[in-house]
Image 1: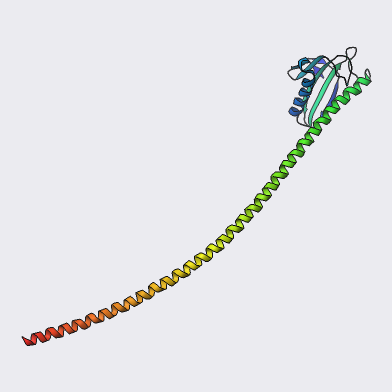
Image 2 (image 1 turned 180 degrees about the vertical axis):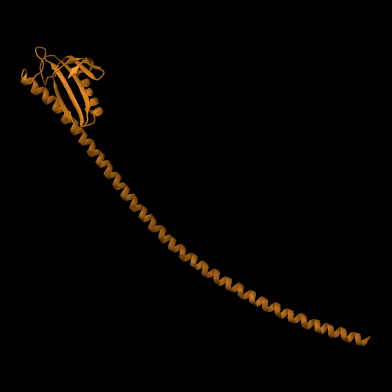
Length: 206
């Protein structure tokens, strides 16, 4: 990889996970272990005079970079062992150790991702169960409302029946009243006839 226009040989591990997440995790891992010796220059990480026991017992110099790819992320590094640059043929023992270091980091990332996926799946399951319970509770509430509606319907039907009976009573009263009015009109006519007869007799007396 060309770093500051200088081509460097190194190792690269490909991880099929989000670029930003991997970059943050790699930076944290190096920062936690080598804190004050880590320099980040626009995404190029430099560590000078550090000891990574898994690779070599003596101080080394590391240049590293994380890049996004269409399928995920690559973590690359070049290591200056002091007396030689890390190389598959030139330094096979250190090469294997450095390779394992990168692969272990990748495995850790995959494990964390699986743990995250499991946690997300568990949350989704709980949400699904809660939703199912809510649907069941809603169904129970609807059934209760239906029963209430049936009771209310019966009450309304009873009220309508009582209202119809009451209306019939009023209609009967109206009919009776009309008959009373008719009888009263007959009485008025009879009274008028009687009155006219009396008046007639009065006229004859005069």
